[in-house]
Image (cartoon, rainbow, N blue to C red):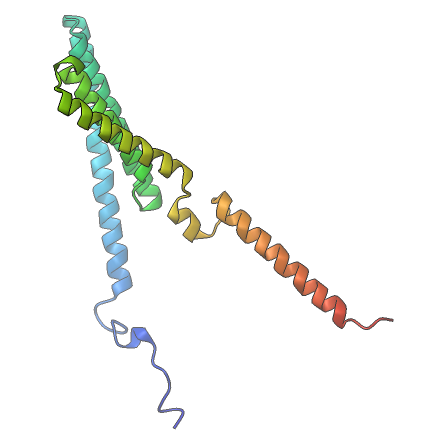
Length: 186
């Protein structure tokens, strides 16, 4: 009776020994997604080069400081987006801190482009509130350890690994103390 009532594994009913292998599908989809992110990185790099050429042309032809400053801030936004994509390729997760930095630079770019004096009081208050919230979120992101770091349980995460190391040391101490009690005195 025990042989008939053996517990079946989960994979026996899903896709095991079938033409649909979910692990292979997930791996191929992740590879395709990485390819898309690499293409986006190359496209962003090309746009950055085009924008740099535009800045060079704008400096040589005329000195419209507002236009040149907007172009430079746009390149900084592209650099931050490029960095966000690089972090995604390395960790397969979005770095919220980098995304918040992109949002802050984008808001400041719009203020520079449109001019701080030309913005209404309500819009100025909304921009200040948004920048305050984004700044608070950036501080929270800087203080909070990355969730992937904590779940990976590696030496690369100093906070989690240090706590784990202390637990292992305590366990080893308790084990050795228990072994010492069981040793014959002689």
